[in-house]
Image (cartoon, rainbow, N blue to C red; front, side, top):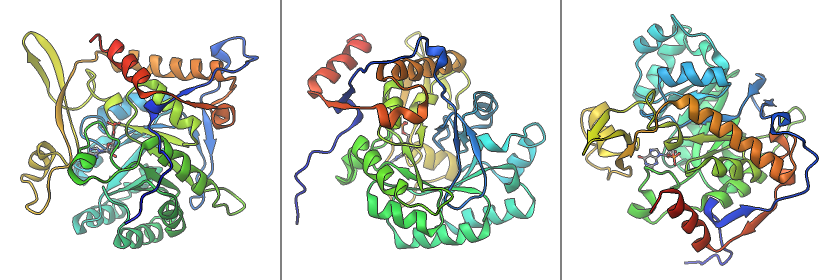
Length: 356
Ligand code: 5GP
């Protein structure tokens, strides 16, 4: 047994120190980024924010909206080849969609079927998604998928520490998904005791990934989960995240997935984790016997129209940029100084926000 003494941080443990800025208007802030990748020859340009591959936000409906904002929709795993065939009759914007698969035999079989039908070419991104990316078998599957899809931008995860981030990049991933336990619908920390405070995970894994270079590009990471507010998205970028992936932030809207439910005269939307009993029962017909649910089912107050939120999200990022003196999103890590703060302060702010 060992105890690591240095304190690891979550988004709510820090604030950003304001800095002198020469910007005259938020409008001048450039939020778009252009990326090259360690393995994939593709070039990507857009606002590097993506939905989680969850049933409440990784949907066709959301993709039609987010692609207009140059943000990526990572589809949930429950769409069939037929669903995609139908979808692509009216959608053609590869840069802003991501195909997701797990590592079961049937996931690999569907990937092959998608490839055979020419449907994979309609995606720039492929996401290999497992709750625990530390399994050696996962690294082997990353290698296989890279061989099968040499040109795609491959995302793989989830992990939360530096050595495995490096290993997954060297195995074939362009982007490693960082986050063990921070998700709002995730109960892993409570069920298993395993986890890693998310801001520290992002900072440490971004540093490791960016250190892997091949002359053309570097390894990259996605900060996945735990962003409760737009400010957390900004903090992840400041910590070195290349992309942010968010579930609850994109859920609960009129256009999001999940049922709308009226309770005591108030409108709610369903939000549930991918390994919640609800997801396992709804999409697989049953819960796996050997698995405990590591996901939560909740109702979140209906948040209205997603377009209003998109404006708010981009406005908040622009505002962060002006406070820290960054002219573009790319400069966030260079300009950021984090202040460790007393948790009581940030929890007070959260209570204040929720009107408690
Ligand atoms: P959020 O943005 O809602 O805080 O977190 C979204 C992320 O939570 C997802 O991208 C995924 O990594 C993680 N997640 C989603 N569903 C589950 C679940 O059922 N269990 C666990 N452990 N993590 C989940």
